[in-house]
Length: 165
Image (cartoon, rainbow, N blue to C red; front, side, top):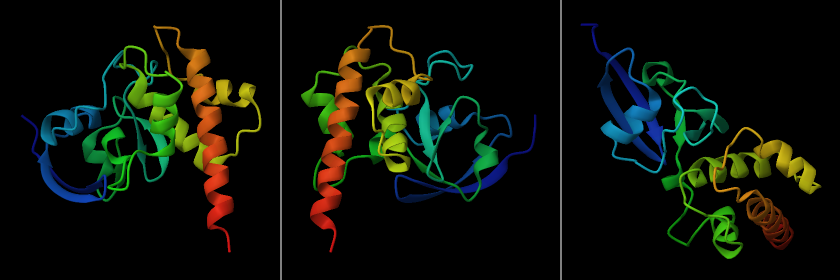
């Protein structure tokens, strides 16, 4: 058996120090070690996007990363999107626009949408579709998902205008 590796990570704003097996996937670390089951595991090949999380501010497939690789990393899962003040604007938009469907793809879609909107204003629905193209939805809820991301983009623009000096 391989020797355990000590890692320190920040997950959803909380510091963790754990001993992990060298081959432990980040998705398993989050789900089993930390009890954060919002990160779903679908294909286990990085294709479906259900396991998407933010690692140091960039979306990443947690089923393709080893926990041992992430010593010192800051990770945000779907559980980390909401604040005590309420749901993240992307979460609210998914609710308001019925973009949840069965919910299996939802965590990965939410994280991907947050990443997209933080990096780009997404001027068109085509850009939203392109940005989400790595996340699969078997319920074919794409139209509602695109509407939700568009609404979240508009809400975030409005928030930014209101908070500007």
